[in-house]
Amino acid sequence: MPHRFLQIHTLTSYPAALLNRDDAGFAKRIPFGGKTRTRISSQCLKRHWRRFEGRDSLSEIGLKMSIRSRLTFERFIYSPLTESGVDPVLAREATQAVMVKVLGESAKAKAKKEEDGEEITVRTGQVTVLGRPEVDYLLSIARDICDEVTETNPKKMAKATKAAAKAKLDAAAKKNLAALGKAS
Image 1 (tube, rainbow, N blue to C red):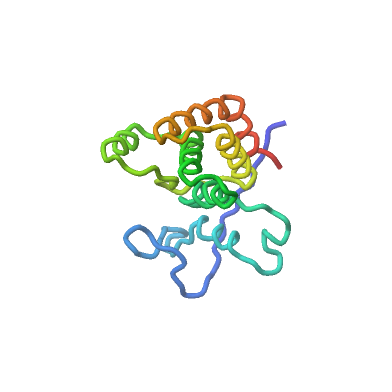
Image 2: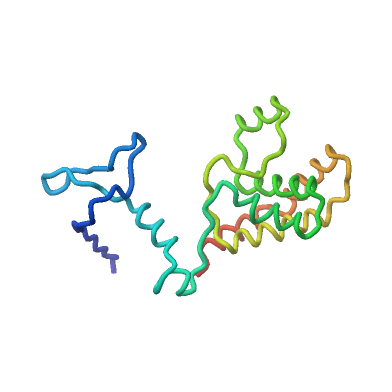
């Protein structure tokens, strides 16, 4: 039997407020019903649902919220490693190795880093959206890498952490990450 979908378009009145704006700072607008109307994007509504903490909030009904940030790896992987006593240099190398293995690294970013001699960063260039189970899994991988790597020479440490990340985040591990996203 074919699937049938029902899509409902409604006009909802909101008080006079600019709930979200476009890149030029103007209120978002769309022609609808022969008139130009202020538009409220789905992202605007979803952000409110994520942030709301009152009665019947998503967190109150037991949903584990995803983490949306450029600082996900810094806050939820690097910081817990250093707080548990891991050498900050090793923690940064392990976090960077996991981050690059999971998200990839553009050739442009890699070339710029090598050219500038830039310090290893554990921040992403754009917002990442990872579920709490994925972040916990990546933290456990980073902990395992830190436990394995015994090098103290920075260049050898970097090489060892990259090799350990490659071994731990192989094709099977990437399937695990994909499956975490589909888990209910």
